[in-house]
Image (tube, rainbow, N blue to C red; front, side, top):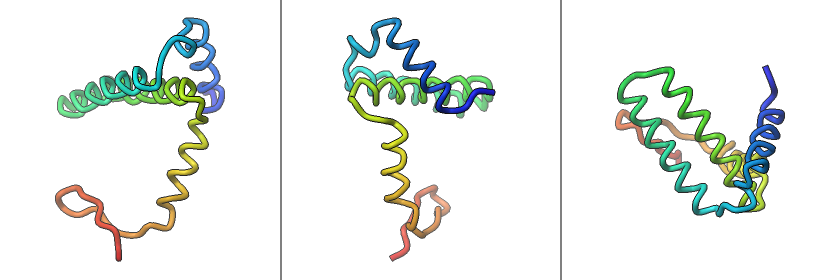
Length: 102
């Protein structure tokens, strides 16, 4: 199995070969991500594991391409987000909402 970094490079190469990165916009890629998230929700509602796997993968592809189009490194974005939450404490309540400790 390839590493995340190898797969990310493959996605970027694929998108470059199809001129997606050159001709797309961050907004267009964000819209595509939203479409894929909706497909994920449908797959979850249908309890369809195969479609969930496909949707999660498609979401990652759109995030990789979207960040590249925006001139950002997705791993750096993840690191910034993790740095913001890594010391956060709290719990997920019965309604599915994360409640931060004060």
